[in-house]
Image (tube, rainbow, N blue to C red):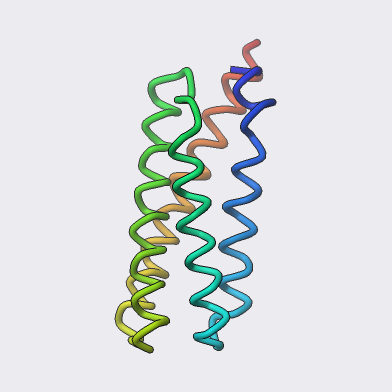
Length: 115
């Protein structure tokens, strides 16, 4: 687990930075569209990483990425179409992702504390 975290843990900050940038640009659809496309690119990269070697943590991580991916798709469509309903859905999905990301982080920390 330590090896996975040390090698791939950067992805947590990358995804968090994407969300922060999107939040900052939420009132500018052109900038938001760019942010959401980057989010989707980074989620795709995260999905290509090796699985987290703990079933519960891997499950939380997978759920977080699913919510992020769906949120990014809704964000892209919402920003492109200037559709507040889709943008609201994206926000809800990002919030669900944050819950799963926190669970993933908590899982990882608990495992690290045992080692």
